Image 1 (tube, rainbow, N blue to C red):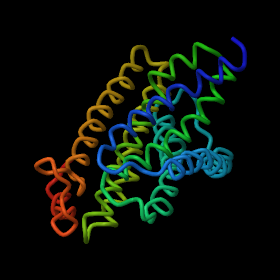
Image 2: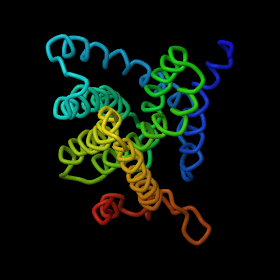
Image 3: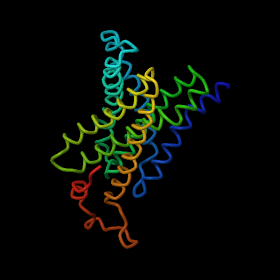
Image 4: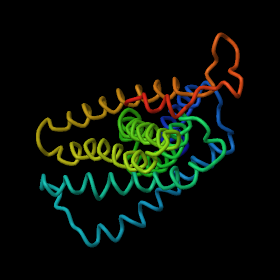
Length: 249
């Protein structure tokens, strides 16, 4: 395949996921400029990942065929560092934007950052390993990053609109996707064990199920929901905090 075809293959899954999440934001969609900026933040998060990973990988070596060492590699050297690199842009920059005004926005911005990260990563892998790798990642790694991002965004939405528990939900917003990411990677990293790779697909399926539920819960928690085919007057909008306290992922 030529370079243009490979580049298109690398971009396609991230673009499809971005469109999917954008259309799921049914009540007050985010400005295109801010969405694009969020995507660029995701690209920048790959640089943060490299800056952290480089010294860590120099100091801590993990043998490839050691099951316990690969556990550390998957959860701490990869999942935690990558999710932290994305988390800081959503939690400490986009979180305070005035357009982040409903719980679902946490999912939108986290997915944009996540897809920025996943797209840069995908371009590198596709150009390095070719069409087969790009085709496989279209159905595995890139959707996995989307599921991790939705889970992160769900808890950041709760953090912002659930009073008195902001720090708690912010911490969960980092740890929950790290757990799923680490589990997913771990089964791939120890794929030298026959058949163990199926665990990655099961963990990915679990992530998809939770991501779907997270989307539904935050759609229902929006303060912009129409009631009786009329927009709710500003003074009568539902208390987002009360709704969020009743939601459980």
